[in-house]
Length: 448
Image (cartoon, rainbow, N blue to C red; front, side):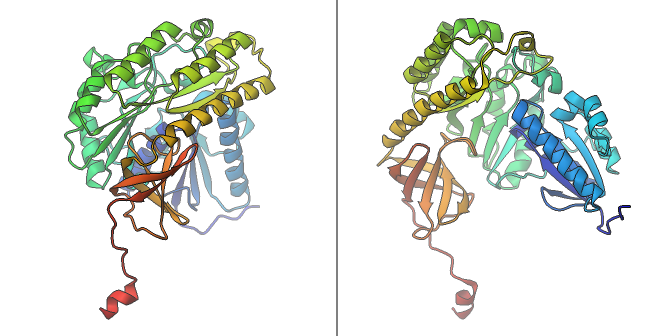
């Protein structure tokens, strides 16, 4: 028989999946702290809350393995209770309850009050913007909406997150002000679909007005846009991007494919011609804009001709940033009715071909940056390097700027100007133009 652990109740929140999950975990932790609970993020605790991802096969497998790992710790007496929340739990709760019954309770994506109650806490409605951030101190995610109304055939997000629901501008400004007061200088705006923001609340696409409000928040220096949908993109956003220096000349806009037959089957509501016209408009309106996109290869019915068209398009567009995923056949989606007819090895080969093309494009674009000066933010020190980013790079997914920490001292979380001296596929090496004095060791200060 397992013996009860003697640790006091410390709640360990474990986050899997995307930036939206990171945000949700931070809100949960903020609520727990406001209730006087001791809470940590991915550290040791005798009560574990796993915030799962249920998007594609790999993510689901990671979530299930993590649940099993903590259930095993519970059986061994190292953990007292295990709770599961997030997208996997929302989508597969009955199956999970049957297959992994040793979890204490499962909660969906909209059941935060119930999860808090199970943890001995009350949901506090007045806590607008109160979070415990888990990202480096200089940037934070700002989720401006929940859910999605787009009908994409391959995507299970509406099943897990529901319909699109925008947050009021005044609430988001309050949240941004609280983040800035903690030292956050970069806001990364996230949603399942930024493009749709405001339609439900204000009866119009209102992302530009939100940006106009956020740029007034003192202390915020960069505002970055993630996950825009191409159909119905509000062009007034480009005007704000051009006019407001705080809005980064950067957009993450997943385009998924370019073959008209595949786009139609994907239910993307666009065509190759419309997509190319949109990208031309982006580049004309904001000439030095960095465009990040993601693609899916191996979608049902994708022929070799479709793939060759996609390859040529990637070569022609020369995206500054690009990621490529293999198609995942997700039950209860529209595409699940189609035959998953592209073999797995073909999917992988196609993804690798796309990324090889992109690697070469990225290398060529980076070579052009040698000798140029950029403003960067310093995210962290890693080994012998300070690691920073330009306004054209988002954390974790984009290029990084490396500065030799054995020669130069930079303030983590601060901004500085650097000159690029060397470039690789996805990394830039640079020297700072403003040299800070390295802090003296404590014993040296004591003598002076």
